[in-house]
Image 1: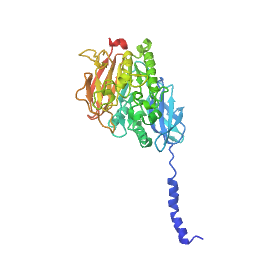
Image 2: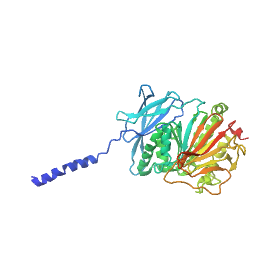
Image 3: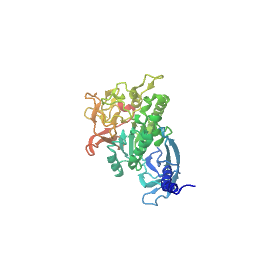
Image 4: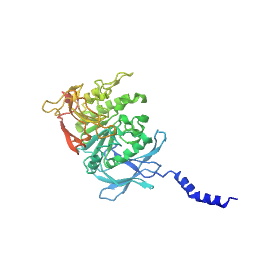
Length: 443
């Protein structure tokens, strides 16, 4: 028989034992979070992606603003993503594609399932007309820590200033860290932008851990390449997103390098068919590591024989670079990041300046125009500049900030640089004006 005092002691411990048992039960994670949009490249469509930590159904309920709310439902699928960190955390990435959207119409939506719905968001379906003049915010290298430009971008997006965001590589710093919790928090941070406008991406070097698995699993870009490279059309522009990282992370295999190059060749050939170039005369590329830069950090772009520009001659078979391919296919504008600064180049090819004229360098330029915009803000702070730059540098700034771009029509593109350090002041702007496009425009 248990003595009375022992029985009392056991009874006094009972709440603690029950509490301990409760604490061992993990929470249920069925609530949608990290909601973000992307454009699948098909007119009248929009992809909605979000995360839960338990498996649930994948549904989006949506309707036209001013109409019956949530009158339409679209279903999708959830993919299990197991992070490669020590904890092997499980994330369920949900993807639903909305179709038959009315161009330029505002839709209200939420996503989730009967065990949990997101907040209510809205978006404007992209206008598939070639007379549309889309407005972009573009930047790279934005982290969870010190995302200096984030608040201004959040507010401007919610004011309706942008149709699309272009994030040109390097997210969160880094998405895989703390068993991918840094990636989760970064995706929560950008939700107040990305749940309202398409958030289009390309990979950077900070995504490389575990063979880019966090990047490949979290984003939903067009095509079947796990968001590594793809192209899409908007207004009068054909936009190409590519991975510069295939030139550097050869431990993951060189086949991706050659596969991307062959894809780029075919995509550019298609875009340059007369019937296509007449409709979408502007060809714009975005990739993380630049071909050129005047920073003093010894990055690839500071070297004459840049891998991205000239290729890899140190492997067998040698891998071609991108400069000749882009030049011979009449690429008009090349957008880059990686350097934690802003730099605008004069039209450049083969390390030489090819301005349209001395008075109007960007009117009918004789080579592609390069913009480097990697100063959105991250824990690695700024990158400094070489005090003796080459002739092709036109303007540079170490201010935190981002770039705005509008493809106005067949002949005009406008770009400006916003300084967040200077409270949103526009510190640089250009008009690129072209009477004709394509390889022949260089002569």
